[in-house]
Image 1 (tube, helix red, strand yellow):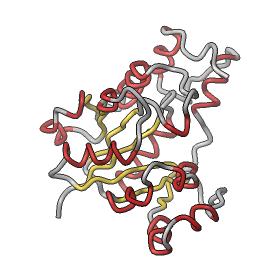
Image 2 (cartoon, rainbow, N blue to C red):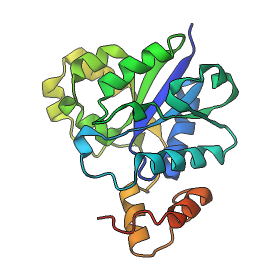
Image 3 (spheres, helix red, strand yellow):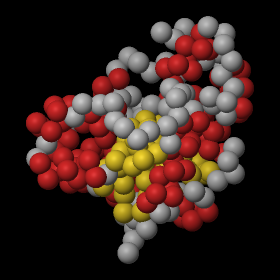
Image 4 (cartoon, rainbow, N blue to C red):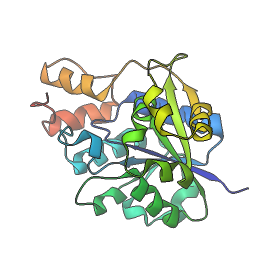
Length: 223
């Protein structure tokens, strides 16, 4: 049986402790080899919402997972030999895009790069509710395993529209792929708002990210 890599895509604007706890939980739940954080260049359904540059977001992810002592940086998905050394990694390969990052294209690319591994894509439950709006979403379901991180025991989301737009067997597969990850009441939006209101963000993000945000004057104009 081949080893599994979990690709954790997102804007990470900024990455927070909830992301880290989710990644660690998924490693345990499915016995994966590694979680690779993949900051998006631009997300099609979040056009205009990113407030920190791709470079800043990648650096905050790197600082966050590096603080655990189990991280490496993969630049343009080139350093595959290093995968055996760590539990977390950061992949900057979305830098190859000039426009929006489509998950279908991203996974197609990463399956070629990590051809010796099985690939799983990790998304949050709020993203699952909008999956039927994604580019080539039906083909995406056949491309790799989809994992969904549920925060808490019950879902606050309505999947009626998703169920209408996905074959029944695929819908059931998605529901069975929801993982019971810990419920952490923190969001990137709230962190940006706290920075703008001069409220402390320590313990919401790692100490290294706190320093980075203030050093680089990030999120002072966030909405």
